[in-house]
Amino acid sequence: MKTALTHFLALSIAIALTALLPGCGKSDSSNSGKHVAIEVKKQKYHCPMHPTYVTERPGDCPICNMKLVPFEADMQKDGHAEHSGKAAAPGRVSIMLSPEKRQMIGMQLSAVEKRDLSFVLRTTARVEHDETRLASISPRFNGWIRSLKVNFTGEPVEKGQPLCTVYSPELLTAEKEYLLALQNYEKFKSSPDKEQVLSAQRLWESSRRRLVLWQIDEKEIRDLEETRTPADETLLRAPFSGHVIAKTAVEGRAFTAGETLYEIADLSHLWLRASVFEYEMPLISVGEDATISFPYLGNKSFPSKVTFIYPHIDSLTRRGEFRLELDNPGHLLRPDMWANIDLKVVLGKKLTVPSSAVIDSGTRHVAFVDAADGHLEPRELKIGAKTDDYYEVLEGVKEGEKVVTRALFLVDSESQLKAAISGMGEAGGKKH
Image: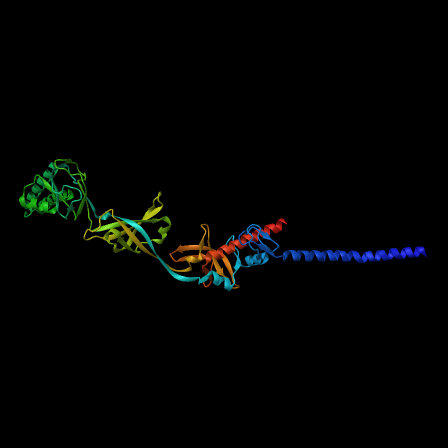
């Protein structure tokens, strides 16, 4: 009887243990799952003034005694993952602002749309001589200067005005030969021998051609033909109206063939050489309209056009140059004056956002887009041309989307704050 009772008790204990062990394993697994769920859903709090302080208990900040505010890290993570996309801006997350908060901070939105972009490029220019209206008085024979008719630099001259008289043995000999050839031709031009007439004519034309090539004025040649007396001296004349910009001629001075005695420039038409930064050069093209103004002339302005773009960039200033042209009939303008240039640059129809909607961090451009679910989503933009009021957008937003244009820095600060707190929460969770 005692033995049977012992076996019965042992069997009962075994059955009880068999029933309890699976239950314990199941209970532990279930409890572990509940513990994980509770840990994920725990509310976290942070200090608005010290975002580095994050805790799971409500109360006051131990640093500044401000009341801690709740922070739903999971919701921020979900929002960031859902709205960032490939154009999301690093270091920022999507944020949700209620209509009341938007109104309180004065937030405004503007549509992304296509506009006709144009702007005025302002720079300065220096007035200079028209290089196509410069002349050098350089005799093509040796000689001496006898007297000066124009004797100082800067003196105005008219076309055909005598500059100086020169004596040249070479020129005197050429004039004598010309008179002999002319007399010979006149003697034989009525001869029945055509060959003799033709030979005399060729000699006369050759002698006259030499005087023309030596730049002897036509009037001097006609006077020589009329007087039939070679002159001891000849006049050098101005080829066009202008003023003397350089003079080396001095009475009694000898000169050689090709030596410059005078340089003359025409002031009736001037060039203006303007410069812009290297990155602005692609915006300029020949034929673009420009306005030239002179502040010291009462801001008097003149219309002009870009006539030439110089092909080189200055290696020191990293600036390029282009040329404008301007008539100067009254000689009101003078070389080396400074002028202000307003150049109208037309870019055409481009996809744009207001300049107030873009945050330029130096390395990237960021805008906040009003998403369909109410989130404000940070986007990194690829920017093209820029005017005073708009940016051309190449990538990052689409036409019809709305971007934040007012209270942008408040929105950006909130986004960066949420991103920083979220990152600290994630780092703390991993460490734990």
